Amino acid sequence: MNSLVRRLDGYWLAPAPAERLALLRILIGGFALVYIAITAGNLMSVATFDARQFDPVGISNVLGGPLAASLACGLVVATFVAGLAFVAGWRFRFTGLLFALLLLWITSYRNSWGQIFHTENLLVLHILVLTLTPAADVFSLDARKSRAAPVAADPRYGWPVRLLWLLTVITYVITAQAKLLDAGLEWITGDVLRNHVAYDNLRKSQLGDPHSPLGAALVPHAWIFYPLAVMSFIVELGAPVALWNRRLARLWVSSAVLFHVGIFALMAIIFPYQMLGFAYLPFFAVERWRAPARLELGRLQRRRRRTAPQW
Amino acid sequence: MRLRAYLITTIVAGAVAAPLFGIVRSDSFPISTYPMFASARAADVSISHVVAVRADGERRPVPPSAVANAEVIQAFETVRQALRQGPEATQALCDRIAAGLVDRGGQGTTERVEIVTDRFDAVAYFEGDTQALASTVHAQCEVRSS
Image (cartoon, each protein chain N blue to C red):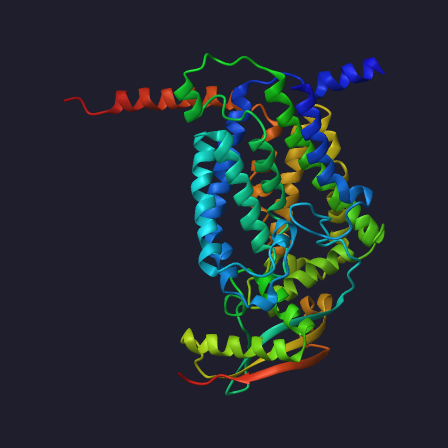
């Protein structure tokens, strides 16, 4: 029993550099900021919807009815501002939590009008976890202000990263389980995937939205969808291998990104957080990417100095 | 630190994993059962949507932004929700969309707006058979010039 606990501690509480967690805060928070900026119009558009459409999910259930339009829009702006503080690591203990709660609020509220956007769950969960951790101990305005000494690798920076891994993995396993519970093995052996691709593209065309020309072209060829269905299951059910070691994690991450590129190609559905790779950053030692980037920057600056006109 | 790490891990991971153990059965946010594309979908499908009918009889889908917002699925769910709520809500949605088309100056020669459910064989559609198998008009409303 003791050895099991020791092994669990050794895995879950393995030390990690503070820079890794801090860079994840900056990169994932930065993605969230860009996402809010791009989708702000959409997030605010629900403020004009008919009140009869309001069907609260998650924390929006505390509301008896829709918010006033100005308040709903104001909260989107407030989320963006709090997000800037989150990324900058300014008074992180307060602004981090504020940003996470506001992000949870505006996405839950937007999802409370008849359609849940499953593209946002993981981003919101990752931000929530980051706010509960010392993600602003370095690379932050807080750290600059306190002029703290360099921080050594520590378990307190390691377990939050592992929790980010775990949440990512769980979401994929749930999607596989949902398919097995709803459609069973027919999802792989039957025409279920092909029918989904056909339905989704047809629905888009009937609703006046661009559909995937590739998906439409492939629907008549039933055989293509069997290997695609198998590969989908391998990525979703196989997600736990990413917890095993870094090599397997890299392999799984590559497959998962390809999986989302495939969804986009066949159904014109974008999971931006996953497809652009931000969801999988916790699987990498992102702090090591800084050194090559700095070297490259130095090389560019030296080249510019050499080629600059001499006066 | 150890206690805090395991406590937060157990609470957060436990909540997110709840659907795996059947503790959460309905979809929500951010805890989700991820039901998208999980159902055993058949090729025979019904799609409720909004159609603009021109004076010459040409029928065109009304874009999602005129129904709800730029998100196509939001527009789709808006129509489905109105249908679930009954004829009054469906007619109200139809009237709102028609008025919106006038406001946007995009009415052109559009004579009326219809909320329709069309049945298709989705696979046959992409094999060239684009005719709906059946159609039901739930609501229609005239588009008046501004």
